[in-house]
Image 1: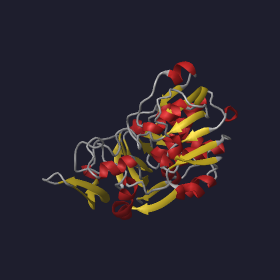
Image 2 (image 1 turned 90 degrees about the horizontal axis):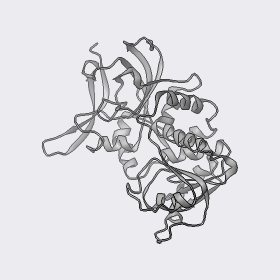
Image 3 (image 1 turned 135 degrees about the vertical axis):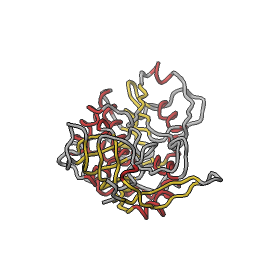
Image 4 (image 1 turned 90 degrees about the vertical axis):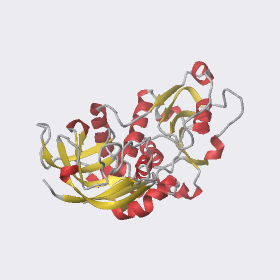
Length: 332
């Protein structure tokens, strides 16, 4: 098949400067894989913006098409479990990092990367969730596995106006939790109120740089998306037998803490990653997100754009912290 399609293309020149533009690619140039998917929708994540600006910690080799999320229809398959016409979701694994990603009309991937799109979920809404939604869902799933339930007390969500944070707020509120949403963006307050936040606080309230090993217990659990000093303070502020999920580093990758929250309050720090999350649990969570865990205000998080505007506007916006909620990219 020699069909051409539009794709975002990132190139490195001889001076090691990176340029991005929309080009036409050939399906024949895609990497090997068992399944060819026509991408209808993708989404914008911070990692995509890093890849699109030449971050070699995300993408080692250029030229490259980013996009760690894709939802579309199978058009060719060499695997018996999948049929032409099946609606599928691909998130994580190596998509958009070192494998040509969802910012092109077609992707070719291993069959093991696919999740069947649930019947009650459109491809567009699947990308409204995307990696951010899956990460938020894994965080909630892990908190519930550690018996952090609505009756235990308030749940703190940090970075609440971002993709993971905003979906986390909506999901937890929908499940009956009293959510305290922390954000450095006062303009995000109306959005967080619509999503069901019980209280909204500024992120400066969550930074304690004192040498005290423990603070007053405030939270039954924490969904942290930012890391750094905010995560360190959250660990000192969790109630007995509480749990903290950690999935991001927007504030900082490093944080300083002590063993006291763990040995005196018995708290648990849970690392969350969605890239290699097991396929069986991944399918369970996508079904939950399509049904019982789908919250009424989900669509209010969505900004729809096309490939051209993604390139000229939204990639730079997310790098500068100017995106609230989720940007969904229409390919078809």
